[in-house]
Image 1 (cartoon, helix red, strand yellow):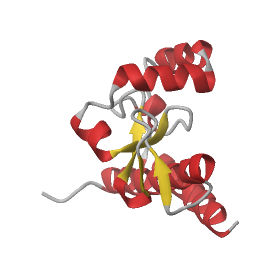
Image 2 (cartoon, one colour; image 1 turned 90 degrees about the vertical axis):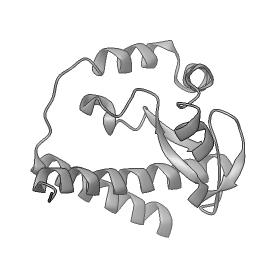
Image 3 (cartoon, helix red, strand yellow; image 1 turned 120 degrees about the horizontal axis):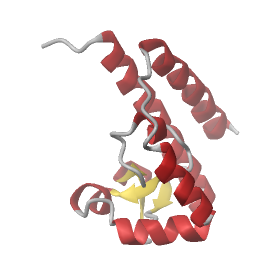
Image 4 (cartoon, helix red, strand yellow; image 1 turned 120 degrees about the vertical axis):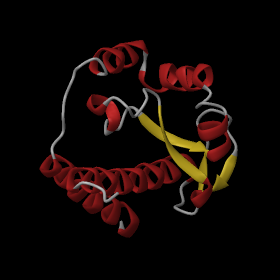
Length: 136
C-alpha cells in the first residue's frame, strides 16, 4: 500500500530532525560530527550507531519534534532497552531540571494533528539547521 503524502512528509521531517539532533549532540558532547555519546549508558559510539531517542514517546506529535525531548542514544539502549527510561530521566533532570520534564509531560497530552504542510516546514527547518551545523 502506498504511503500517504502526509506520512511521506512526516517521515521526511523526522529524517531531517533526527540527523540534526544526532549532529547537535555529537558536537555538544564529543566536539566532532563523527562520534557521539549515549545519554543513557554513556557509551561513545560512531555517529551512525546512534539514534535520536525520545524521552517522551514519539507517538505524541506535540513533543515529537521538541528539541528538549530528543537526544542521542545508542541503538542498543534506544531500541532494545526501551530507551532506558530511568537513566534518561536522570539525564533530563540534570540537563534541564524537573520543570522542563513536567512541561514535556504536560505538552504530550495536547492533541495536535500536524498537517502535510506542517511536516514540510519542519523538514525544511531541520534540513537548514543540519546543513548549518555541519558546515559551521
